[in-house]
Amino acid sequence: MSTPAQTERNPLAQIDWDFIEFYVGNAKQAAHFYCTAFGFDQVAYAGPETGVKDRVSYVLVQNNLRFVLTASLRPDDDIATHVREHGDGVKDVAILVEDARAAYDMAMRGGARSVLAPTELRDGSGCIVKATVAAYGDTVHSFIQRGDYRGIFLPGFVEARKSYPNAAKPNLLFVDHCVGNVGWGEMDAWGEFYHRVFGFSQLVSFDDTDISTDYTALRSKVMTDARHRVKFPINEPAHGKKKSQIEEYLDFYRGPGVQHLAIRTDDIAATIDALSANGVDFLDTPDTYYDMLAERVGTIDEAIDVLRERRILVDRDDQGYMLQIFTKPLQDRPTLFFEIIQRKGSLSFGKGNFKALFVSIEREQEKRGTL
Image 1 (cartoon, rainbow, N blue to C red):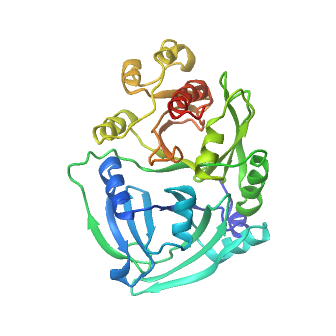
Image 2 (image 1 turned 180 degrees about the vertical axis):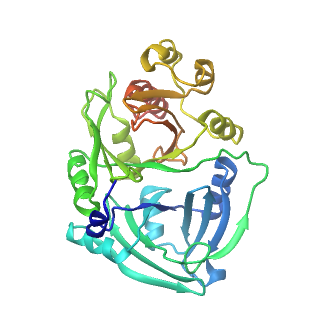
């Protein structure tokens, strides 16, 4: 834990996720998808009816998860260009901070590129301070200082609640980690970026001896704040016999970007049942994965048959164990997907599952003709 003195020196010592903003081709349809498939409720809206003339945005909430889905009303602005280049994808991974100006100043000292200097946003519900810096590719991080702001989301948004009672509620809790894919040989530089700009340290790293199959490989390192609340794994391709999932992502996304969001639950079996009932598609897992599972991971609370039926993966470290499963891509391009994760003490990222997971991904790549 950070001491008071460390917190004073480092304005990013006490941070959390604030929101994830997606740039999409049709925000209304995307909001309907995330509400009906993933159990979100719509809570706020901004668009022409609220005085915003160039875009529309829908704010979706579930427990401590907050998604913002934004689409352009113009053919050639930054939003439209982003969607044309990348397809639907994550634009802004916004971080809640106590002092956005101090966080921005620290980022600038660390060599970050400014996108938006600290700006006060006001309405009748109070004031929010927002500042934004560039990250890998076209991804950005906004620093959000909420203070005593009493509004529904941000100034410019109005309350616009809409729920979907026929959608099963999966009880998704909050973002566990956000994974970025970067180009060949760029992982270390972006790890250093998060160290300089955010004051993060490296939690764990994996090389191509850890993350490989007979055909494909990648390298990864995980950067985290001191409290392990905000974690950014960074992947880069590694040489293999065929095209890796990272290379496929970079080809279809046309550059670096957010590969997946890992979302925490406290009952992964119930969450998967709800998501499956809503029509969410998950990656399959080879049956052989479960044959020696107890010997590999030791005693766990869950019955193996429950895990096998739902294709849940398990991994253990010296702190405990974790359970995880991955959706198929959430849009036409094979780019962004979600991970559903339940932690029982473990800080692991599923190293013991890499082989089984990547075999499943390769099967999907083979169907697309990109392996």
